Length: 87
Image 1 (cartoon, rainbow, N blue to C red):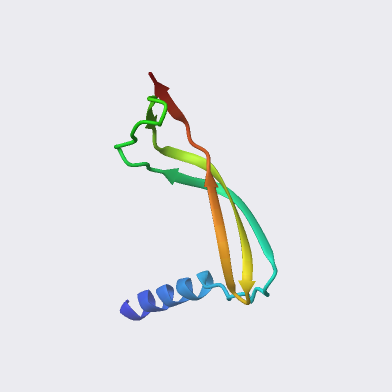
Image 2: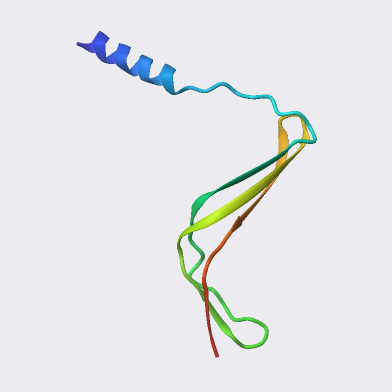
């Protein structure tokens, strides 16, 4: 029974592995998805006196990555969120 479990686990691990792809320098990558945005509870006050309350939750995101060298990239992630302001 133990050999069967080991065989099943090894097969599952082998099937879920992916190969790494080489990305050349100068390549752009753009992706969209959803992330959980969880701001700190101390949201603060803006310079003009408005208090700001940013809520958390799942929000749509977009990211762009530029590869500055082979397999080395710089990525920018942007997320949408709602802001509540009060005087």
